[in-house]
Length: 142
Image (tube, rainbow, N blue to C red; front, side, top):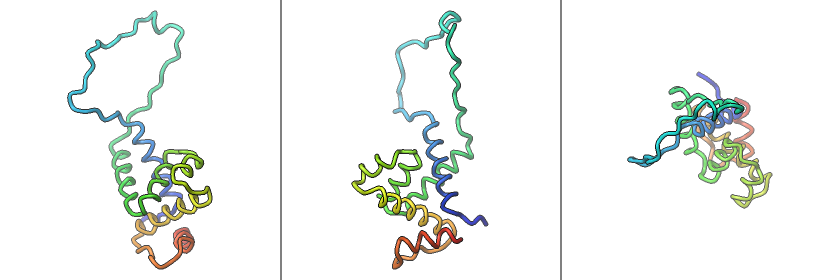
């Protein structure tokens, strides 16, 4: 059995955010374009840099991302939003402005959210009558 750490959870959430960004967009049923597909000729492509596209994520990566998204149900909604914003690499300033909190408070809530997920993944009950500081400290010891 794997013993989870906050760093492992943060990495997994970042991977989930990258996978979600790389998936094709969801479109409504019946969405189509009446314009014909444009096929570039050789003359159009002369002097252009090749466009490298990232490969689509593997089914295992998608399953892992779905599993990581389900973890965001465990902390409170505001803390889950902070975790997801940081997984998407939003700057702290934007996260703080959106939630109306200071940088230190946002960081504490981020660490607490990771700690709650770590406790649950390690099969432990998160103590309700303990401070956020205690929960964060004990999550790093495991």
